[in-house]
Image 1 (cartoon, protein in one colour):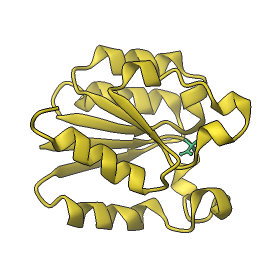
Image 2 (spheres, rainbow, N blue to C red):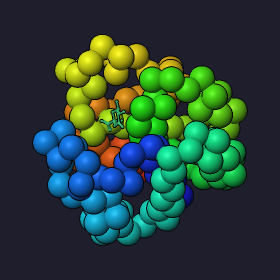
Image 3 (cartoon, rainbow, N blue to C red):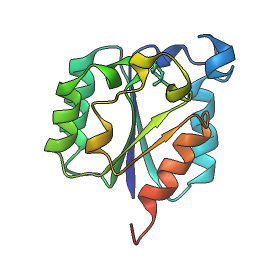
Image 4 (cartoon, helix red, strand yellow):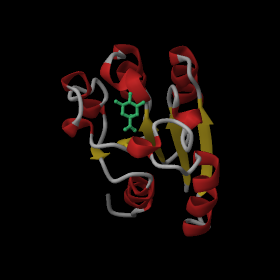
Length: 141
Ligand code: DQA
């Protein structure tokens, strides 16, 4: 199985960025853990701070892979274009947020992406990515 993990803006700074909210582990370090947990899965990882690049990647791989795990960062709350890209492709997606967005500012409570995803995992830290992959590689989704 092939799974694409997409991280949006500012998530390249995980580990350094507001560690009380997002923890002090970098995503590249965490990726090693996921690779160990899912040796049978071909993981593709893409991070960008640019909305159009996130969309291009969804188009490029979204018809060929088995699932997308997406944390679009703040674009979650603004981007109809990323929502449309998720609708356009065939791969099912799971939305992940490291922090509990519902316990934070009200502008983080709405997501344009949730309706285009099979499900949403929020507030469980980096663990959310593992849970999303586990779901996407299940045979009887
Ligand atoms: C986030 C939550 C968003 O509101 C925020 O803009 C982020 C990170 C999270 O993973 O908790 O950049 O998606």
